Image (spheres, rainbow, N blue to C red):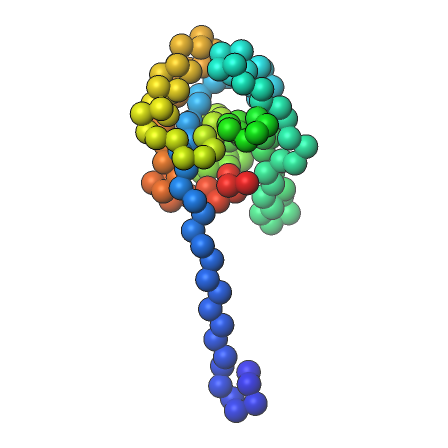
Length: 142
């Protein structure tokens, strides 16, 4: 408290993370195998980043693997880690394929349709970051 007994209130403003589109991929394949399949199918070069997305809750720390292209066009992010889910509202989604930049919805829908033709991919869903109310969506912005 200040000397006069008044409480000083400070407001910290933070910008909303930029909106982006991402695909939710359902597949039983491990992350490294799925990244190879996407590399071959899309003609890209996803590589594992040494830094993972981490979250600490209580005494537990969870980390999710990230594969990205250089320059950063796509990022493949695991949505599951030892029983924990990165985006809790998408608990049935195994992987997130983030589309960097400003893709339009039609291009993203074409990409989703293309990925559905991979036999090891069970399903692909298109999401907009603005529609997800999950607080962890900000962890995807890198």
